[in-house]
Image 1 (cartoon, rainbow, N blue to C red):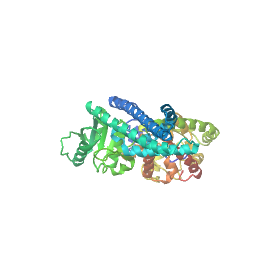
Image 2: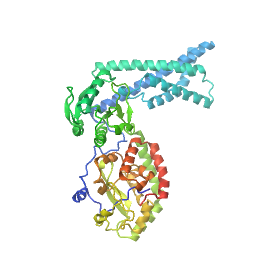
Image 3: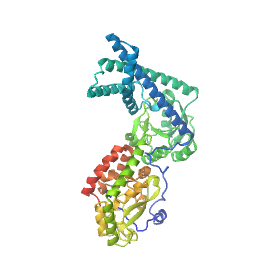
Image 4: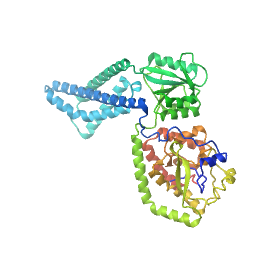
Length: 513
């Protein structure tokens, strides 16, 4: 595994207090939450429990309606075909329908889920998306019938079934929207929201939401940046007061209505909300840097953009965790001769422990012992201050191409990324992942800017985008941007791609020192 950021090793792991004593930055503070943001979240309070129950009921109801609409559409198409051929029998048509509907329903339900048609009421697409998704389902079903040689897929079924099914499904869904809308109104359901922004932005968003939104909002108040709104909304404090307020109050959404929200505050605000299970939406002109992370939300009075979390429901993360554990265990067994040889070489060539246990911030900046083969002489810690003027890196990290504190065997281990292999044990313990942002030493962490710290919202990794995109040849800010890109675009497939690309990156040894 490659070494993305050559760092200063310390024979005795430093503490946060010792870092602050040397004047190397602010104290280490925990980010909100110490769980990987891709993991499934626990139920967070009464509001979250109610939302989960409503979600299960919503999805189950829509699946039942879609099954009924699909069954009715296919039955109508087969009945019309039988009538045209003069061989109509209700029992036979029903039997044929039962034979066809299960596969068709599976295809349709999967496509509907991908299109967001089982999503929340306020963001669920309408008839146009429903029809286009049904067309895709019909085309897939037709291709499957051709590939498998199913002669029962007649034009009557393809075109008639599509027309009847679209009519039935859209009609049932329209009735569902009307019925649930009236039900929610009768019980006084409203989505509680708070706004972030200035007076003019808050005014326009409030008016638009009240005028033409599909959802009934209860706007609790606003957190200000500057300026005062011209309406009667209650000021809840400065934007920096938002996290503490969310801890004391139940709210569904935070809507950012200000185009001048600084990037650092925007990133922090999103993290604070998401770890509390609160949805974040932004006005189209707000926080331009974040729009590439957002998806449009249809059906509202103002075209809000919702900032999505990197996974849905934590299922992919569970798969990732199992994959990490199994692969780490297998690699440890397969490379055990290499690990024993490296340990013996370190032990025989210099004084000191075989393993270096570096204290590093992990997910949520929780400290853990990051394991490495020791690659430096025993006086590396004492020589750190005198080496600082020789630092060749920009930003927070420390690296020297020809660090005199490296032992000969340590230099070899680093160049070939063998020194990182003990971190497979950290993966087994759940402290690290095979793929993720690299954990930084406390010395480097103390020098981070506030906007850098979002990288600690996921488990640190042995390898990542740094390693396959330039390794140590990149600037630190570029590395952090790659971390953000990985977090926002994360998928199991991306992890597999990075793991496969890591092998040639190690072999080439480009940027590893």
